[in-house]
Image (cartoon, rainbow, N blue to C red; front, side, top):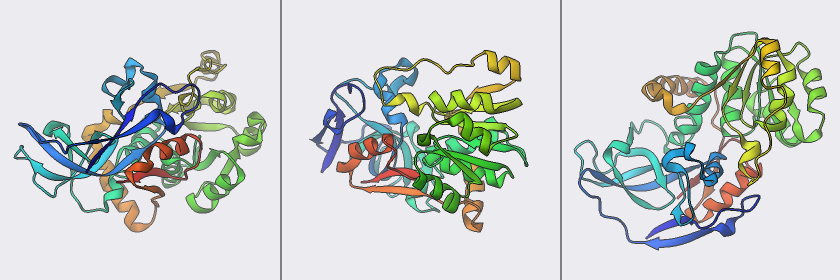
Amino acid sequence: MNRQWIYTAAPEGKLTTDIFELRKLDVPEPGPGEVLVHNRYFNVMPGNRAYMHANLIHGPYSLHAGQPMVSTAVGEVVSSNDPGFAPGDVVQAMSAWQDYVAVPAQNLFKRDGAHSVEHYIGLLGQTGYTAYFGLLHAGRPRAGETLLVSAAAGGVGSAVVQLGKIAGCRVVGVAGGPEKCAWLEQEVGADATIDYKAGDLAEQLKQTCPEGVDLFFDNTGGPVLEAALDAMKNGGRIVLCGNTAQYDSDKPMSGPKGVPLTLILKDLTMKGFAYGTYWDQFGEADRNYSSWLEDGQIKPFYHVIEGLGQAPSALVGVLGGANRGMTMVRV
């Protein structure tokens, strides 16, 4: 059986599952230079919703009605028309939401199979790499600094909180609701938390970060970014990772107040990044994550949804904040 989820229409407002359609296809035959892969896990993250805005900036992943949904996937090679891959190999690629897919060999990333497969969607995959390179390479945290992390209970955010602690920072996480905030402090290791649903972000930031913020890792944009600008120390750094405050909407809000004036007056650095830029350094992330997993310095927080049929509801759940940690669908 080869099932495939199709994106049928642009959502009006927040995403709902009724804009997806599950179709049945024949299992494809791999052509010359292609590899047939049986997908095992799909990454589900807010960026999947951003693809639906049909913005050219997303390149080949910009979605239009009638196209299959796409995510990073990890699977197993079934058959291969390329000498670099053999049946049984564990591989990673951007893939349609379907059971079996024929992929050009040059688009596949072979994994060593030394870890449980879910790690290649989690810490040793797109989400973990985004956290690693965004914080450690783009942000360059220093011991003793105050690190503020928005969407801290999500996949990237929960990894950044732990990486910040490894780097010696005081870590403050922003999340929605007292339960998530308690989880961040008790399980993930945040030193303090801010509940953005409790209101008055500016006052909460003053109370939680009285001396200001050295480094802000921003997954959300919107009101949290706006409030954080005023809380930054002179010479502080802001790493822009995501814009989840705007993904699940067909009416983008205006940009945050304080840009560029606050950046100028406080001598702030604001930097965006794309994890794929660091492709040739993925091995570094794998080695460090493997070591930290082994000695317990970092914990994997995976929210696993069972069954490809649940993929649309999993995405709606992520956008609504239902997850803690990295969300993935096990096919």
